[in-house]
Image 1 (cartoon, one colour):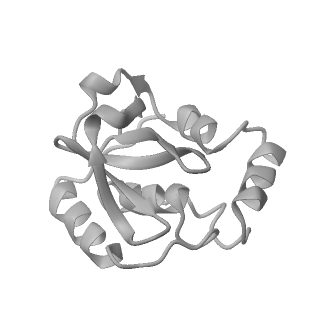
Image 2 (tube, rainbow, N blue to C red; image 1 turned 45 degrees about the vertical axis):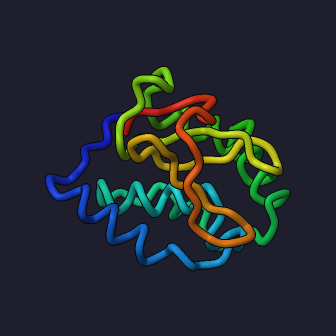
Length: 137
């Protein structure tokens, strides 16, 4: 799938990240998948989370919905939308997959780090070397 970033994607992404930096983790409203979908919407204008937002209240519920839709998990959903690239070639704004507490988690590449959503404190930044997979936006 071709998703085109807007010309002003960088300041739009920065503004979106600032707006959610202290927002608490909440499955179905603000979890790693919907965090990433929000970043994608800020950069492209396309809301890839619309079909999922508000339809589950637990991560187990999210996995059930994804399986019912034909995806093994949220990473498989992303893989169906975007081309995979080696993590070393991921650029700012691309989607990263890292190991989370409950399995793979999604984040947004930014320089030498990856923005992630943490259940404890909202927006976090982990070292880029933690990326296991990456997808080009």
